[in-house]
Image (tube, helix red, strand yellow):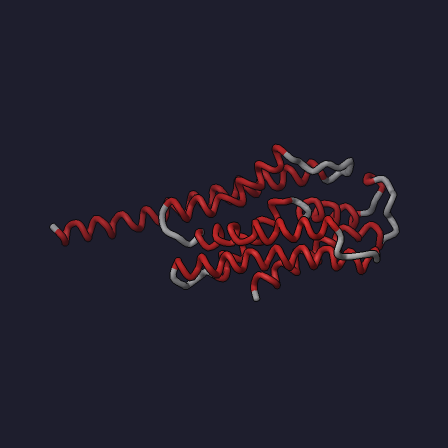
Length: 206
């Protein structure tokens, strides 16, 4: 159930925050003249609309369902959870948009994104499951989301005339840097704990 739940939260949340200016009667108003709630919604929307955020949802689902199980089982669970997360995120997003705007739900765009989610979700879920692995594999898996987020902000930054584009870019870069430091710190601490244990085993073996 984790994959569908986190996917629905992402899809519905993304659609809702994009409608906040409309709900507040500020649609069509220049970004600089909008109120604080619309500015906050624009900030959240630029993050939730980003591809790295959707990828992170699949990775999160894969990591969550793979805890405390054998690696092989975790990989299978992660793949399923990742695919379900992006599938439900896509259907929830476009379903919520239909409630706001009306019209047909099953158009070309939803189908393309649904196919992309079903194809990309499982490998991203496996990445999430791999975070719990020891050694370099776990470190590399844990760095996929922050690296992807930073890369997207550099190569494909938010294309908007609003005031929140630059704050979003810098916020994502800072968050990615912090996440990288935390992952590196966790890896070093695990290595420090493992070294005395291995040394003790060597002495006992000798």
